[in-house]
Image (cartoon, rainbow, N blue to C red; front, side, top):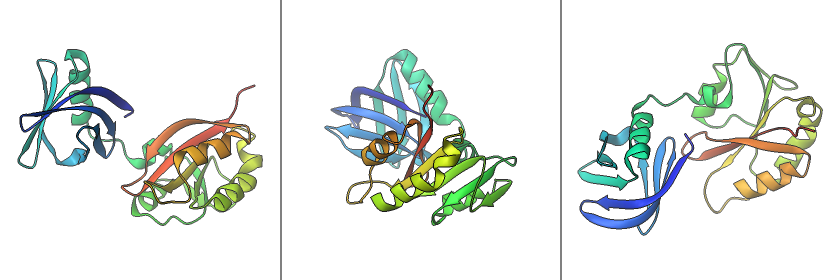
Length: 200
């Protein structure tokens, strides 16, 4: 959804300065109050007097976003979230080249929406990588395809303590002449960056 804002959060009457980010399937609060809130568990979502209001469990939350942003966030949060297949660009007309294991239920479900899953070529490339060596190998294997414009998603583990993170994936891939255009949450444990050939 790609929404973020610095704002005041009132959590059960207590005010905190936070940065709020909508990164489906979660709304994340950082700053004086740190929370990861599953969007599916948010109830009574609405905009009122410049605030985004909702409850989660027995907790009441208000984010002071201003009239326009609060209304847009409420509308977006109430919409059914796009499927992972749609976020990744997979349809019944898409042949996906899967590099590495499809070792996550969400990823497996998205691949099930494709026309076919290939081991050598496709309209779209998904590379599941956990180490710098796997990232380098995937880049080398896919060079011929993404040099002709085929998009590639690098899928890697979220959070600290892993050998790969968003910055390392980005800097490594950018050095090969491709450019990142999208980020997507694959599941609660996996994230993804999409790259395409850099325009001349």
